[in-house]
Image (cartoon, rainbow, N blue to C red; front, top):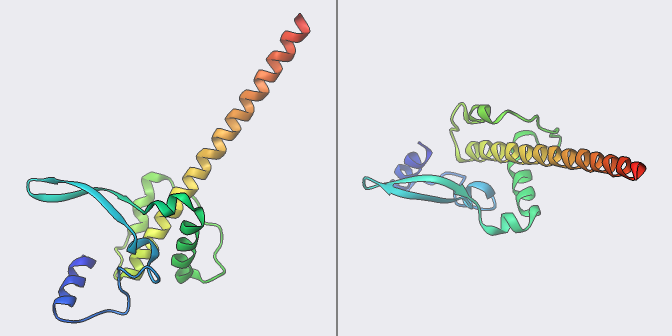
Amino acid sequence: MLWTAELQARQFGVRGSTDPLDNAQLPLLATMQFDGFTNQGEKVFKLVKWPKEYHEDPMVLANALRLSLQAVSGNRRRQPAAIKPNRWYQLLSPPAQSWAGFEIQLAQLVEQLILRAREATGWLKERLRAESYQNLLLLLLWGLQG
């Protein structure tokens, strides 16, 4: 809906204060890349990704999120609560009425992905720690028997 309005406005020579392709204003939205396929002559996008700089340097993503989310609460933002993945759609409701609003929704989704990954990493570390502890106990018991 935002793209339709943007294209119509541009046809009439109207420009908004926020350009959806301006990396300085909307760092996540402006750098999004789409992968998809053609189905019955229509392009269907199935994957959204960001340039490799976002993967290679964690500060690129951190800075983009900081810039995007400061619009919501300034510098006094608290640690966000993790939301179950089957409820992430709620972050997009109601639909954004502006590019800046969509950037904030996008930043909140990326933030949930990071929280989910951190949660999974913590679980994996705990599991490995528990297994190492169990293995150590088995080795000690085996040593005592021998």
